[in-house]
Length: 179
Length: 169
Image 1 (tube, each protein chain N blue to C red):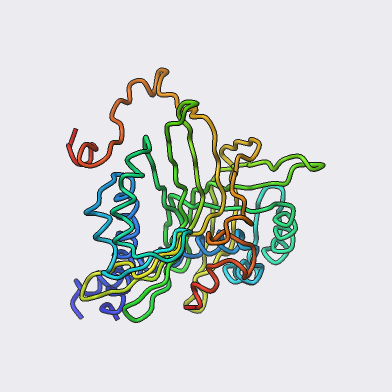
Image 2: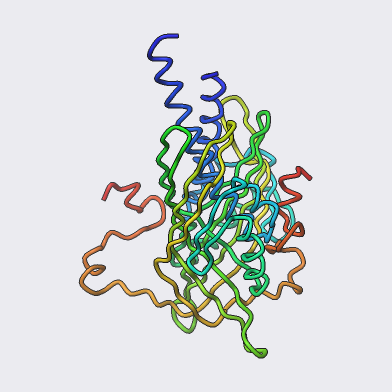
């Protein structure tokens, strides 16, 4: 193998490492939005940790905590933008910009609230036994905006439209299963 | 080894380019770009049932031109590769500014594209797209382009062929 080939191979390997790390960030967003506890667990190493500010602890404990928080919300969408990943061997660090959209039920029958929170996920990724997973997630908050919900869709009266759901009722599960 | 890697990376980048090109086609109202993302016979379901994607887009351009402006901001792309085929979920935050009797309104929609893609030769295109709605936000436009920063930023997005990306303005 020439040195050029070696150089290309290591650059390709780095590209694939970065791609795997970005995919973990996207998978975790999907897992949260679908309230899929198993999928949340699958992106973390068994001994991973999480620091969300209001939650600090193991990823294993993060799962039930975040599921309970999500249960108090009608729906969420965590949109990921810029993702910077720096790879160093089997370790990597990422900074992923997010804009998280939350629809919250109003108190005492009041209308829903639409809350947007934006910030960055500061992740540490580790490659163990050939597989990248998140070793630590930290969330940093940059801005937020909140207002009464102005969503006008009558989800019952629009049966031909596909709406996002929690859990396996969401159309994306059948989609990825190839149905 | 490197051949496999190269193909994996190239396929994924081609798919991401394609997804981005769709957003560009919509926002610039560029029918040629929009036509280039579908294979002949491709189907799409945006909520009114399954339709022929290429036929539908002929009709949708006037509707888009009737809006003041749009921006389809793509985020998360989860792509599962198969043998010459791929399945993808792409997050989108779509911004629309429209005229109304009460003045300009803004309408924002959070959703996801559920896509099936296929490679023919060296080219990836869409075979099937299903759009899922997650949330929306509606209200009077609060756009402000004044003040010390924004009044100096005068280069605005336009539809093809007048957008700065075409004119080089």
